[in-house]
Image (cartoon, rainbow, N blue to C red; front, side):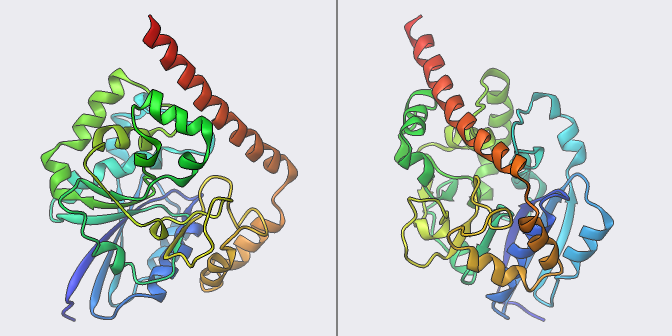
Length: 305
């Protein structure tokens, strides 16, 4: 079949996140246009046969799913990468995309913990005006005093210009021209950003060369969220409907989850989420705030020396 256009979509996943990726893919399938080719590239270092089989089975005539192993690339840099809490090495995979896929000039990077409520072509077709990235402002930072101060002091970025890296319209051609991967490797050797890790590096490297997307392309369920209908819901931080009941916008997640083979598994995960994990989630949230304050104080002290 001849398609009018191709949309490259990149994900990074491990076995833990495979069920959530299936929900994200299902939400994209539900709104896909028949005359568009949706080329999904799933970056992995390892994934079990069961999950690979389940995800591959979601392919259709115009939706392809390719697994791309980045294990060798990760091995070469694993000792220098920062990891904490629920973050895994997959968060750094997005840096590999421009060089791994030289055939593409533009693409989308999408976190696994999302659902789409419209054709993702709307996002891909966004004019980013020649910028390196299209991304939405990180609303949690804007709404929280300690994180606002942290971005100003530690990253030298105004909170209203700090973006969330979970949904990116990527100018892959320009990323190659600017050697974003090389810039990251160089900066990583001389400066550590422990708060949001790879997201911080992307913000610092791309600052001033970002087209800001409308917030409905990265709508999160936390208390600052407006009540209008989102085009993409991002269940970031502790706002996970597969862990907690009553999460805002959970209806979108369960609508598409019910259409996957993981539905019963996801329901069981929510129903059996233990108190110790709830306590751990709360401790991690407090720890993140404390870390932001600590990093801000460290930068202020360094400036006085």
